[in-house]
Image 1 (cartoon, helix red, strand yellow):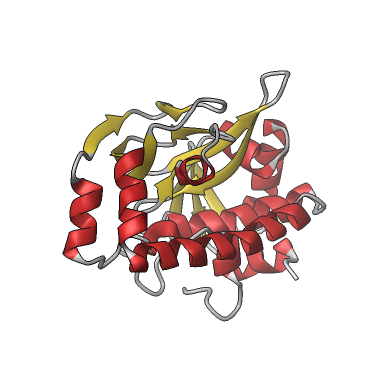
Image 2: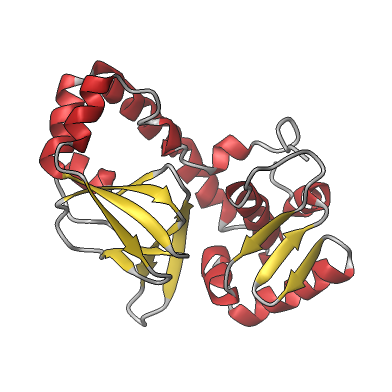
Length: 234
């Protein structure tokens, strides 16, 4: 089922997937001038926090986790970027180091667009620059929600992340279809901001309640309405 109207999903995703859609050919040519494509295996690092950006990355196919590592080496996933989204552009726009790291969550094909080509395209394309401004404005809403997210219980946080991940893992979705999330418990725990054991325990509870089904690392959402109720998102 679609959750439009019962959950504000747009307030939980950056939505950079529309940035390059239907751009004029001249704008695309600027971005494609020196573009290269690379395949990353699961866990393959795309860039690391603190490095200086040489360009931006466009996810042709796959998923990427943006994360930070604390002084104890513990990873905290900040955001999961999906097919069609851009990553790494904040550092280019701010002319600063990467504020976080990025790695492939699954086998992914990712295009690299050099910094100079990206900046030239922004300078010459009114459409692209306006879209970027709109997207960056929208991201404030997403980040504000992320701050309130930290005050929720683990159960609520897990429900919220499963709702968001369900949207990101939809493939050729049709009404009535269940959605399968393929993510390790360690990555899910990092995204929720809790210990792996807590995620395993909560998933078992959700499974007993008929909200999800699990098989190995795969999680199938059976009752998204129930997850929305548990999430207490308001």
